[in-house]
Every structure is written in C-alpha cells, then in structure tokens.
Image 1 (cartoon, rainbow, N blue to C red):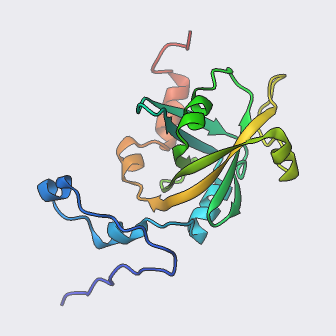
Image 2 (image 1 turned 180 degrees about the vertical axis):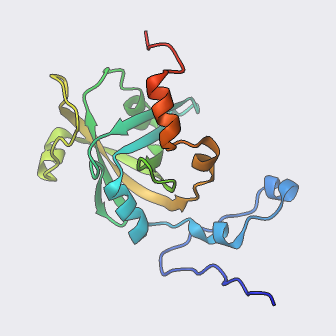
Amino acid sequence: MTTATAPATVDDLCTVTQEPSRFNDQFGEMSTRARVKVKGEMSDFVQKFIAAAPFVVMASADPDGNCDASPKGGKPGFVKVLDSQRLLLPDVAGNRLFQSYQNMDANPHVGLLFMIPGVNDTVRVNGTVTIVNKEELERQKVELELYWTDDNAKHLQGIIINVEESYGHCPRAYNFAKLWDTDQIAENQANRPIPLRP
C-alpha cells in the first residue's frame, strides 16, 4: 500500500515566480516546494526566525560586481522586523573600512543569511537598502543589543532593507558540515584547528 504525498501548499503571500534556467535543463527540474517557497514578503515563520537570530551574514556588491560578505551579530532580535516587507539593521562601529556601506551607497542590493546557533534551519532575505542615520535609529527606539561590548561599541548608522525575496532554507548544508555538532565544537575549542589570528 502506498501513501500519497500531500502537495506543497501555496500560502496567501506573494510568491516570487522561479523561472527555469539552463542548469535545470542540465540537472533536472526544481521541486514544487522549491518553486513556491520564495516569497515577496516575510512570512510569519521568517519574521519569528529573524527575531530569534543573533547572527546574520550580509552580502553586497559594488556596481562592477565586486562582492563583500560581512558578519553582523548581537542579541536575538538586534535586526528589527518593522513589518512584513522591511527590516532595520543597525551598524555597530567596527574597523571603519565601510566596505559594505560603500557598496550599498552605489548598489543597494543585498543578500542576508540568518542563523540561530543549534538550529539547522536558516532564513534567506534578498532586497534593497536605504541607509539611515543614527537619529532614525533613535526614532525607531533601537538600542545597542550586544552580549559583549567595548569602548568602541556604539551605533553609527543603519540600513532599512526593503524585502524583495525571503524564504526558509533547508538544513542540508548545516548537516553536511555538522556545523552545530556539540562534540565537534568542544574538540575545536580544546584543540584549535588553526593558528590564532594575527
């Protein structure tokens, strides 16, 4: 006796149509689930995930396509969900290279990958940004939300991300890497696999 598999359901959010590419011609069609999972706004799951995430990697590029990926961290919820189509990410003072901000000043497109330690799911968000000043952060009542601070830890400015695509991503990559495996983490802490950073 065979058990029927329920078809992927499409919720009432705007689905961003995924057009087949030459890679689908070569390697096969995308699944129905993959075809409908990319949304033009943030689902309730995506919003809750971001509110619980203490870490995100933000990718940006200059007009010539030269890319940069920057880690951002804080207490869970340091990236603020303003509504289903907007996020607010404050900028904490760092090395003052401003590589991401130079990119975004010329090319507003960004990609974000949100992570929660120990959770194998992840959330991806793509969109365009508007750079806002510290006064806007204060108007939005954004406070410094960090587990660790130093004399340089302060807000300089921030970005509002206008979401164009968002979706939850399956755990396969984390499973492949055993990224949150506690035994592996303990081993790396006890026997650091690389030298200390210069």
